[in-house]
Length: 197
Image (cartoon, rainbow, N blue to C red; front, side, top):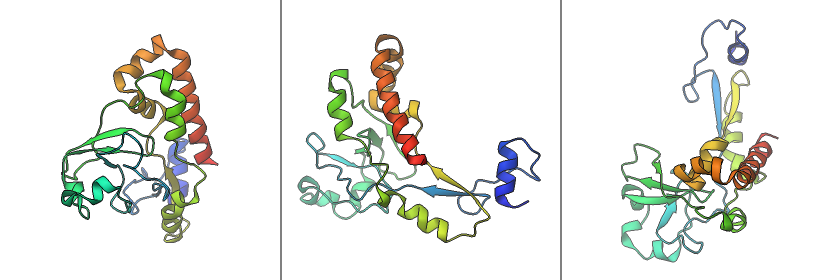
């Protein structure tokens, strides 16, 4: 059995010859990673001063003036400081500066449903931006076609909604704001469906 056959057999419980291995690019699955858009400019929007990009080291940050002018943030020094990061969805992450983990979701960013339209118009990664898939295409070309290819989507709908609203708000929304929550989840679903096309 090759890797593709093995993974499909495991997914459908059809007796694979062994359990598929997910181990970076060395296993049966080839993870295809998306990267942030080249158009994304964290720290530039109103109310983003002091927020750093929540992205891997490959991301080249076009620093706003507040970051360029501070010697503490020269080069990649800022990555080694405790800080708040912002991702493409506008979600805030608490970072320790140690670099040994992805951080922890921080404060809620959509605390008032009255700001919903403004929020989604400001923070919506473009699923059709071909730059987001450049690394995935490069990785795919670097390996034989015998690996099961999987696009890695960073967060599911529920997890993403809870980061946007804050976990406690998200839980309360199921009872107190079900229509607003449904609208947000439909918006996130639409994005994920566009990624899969």
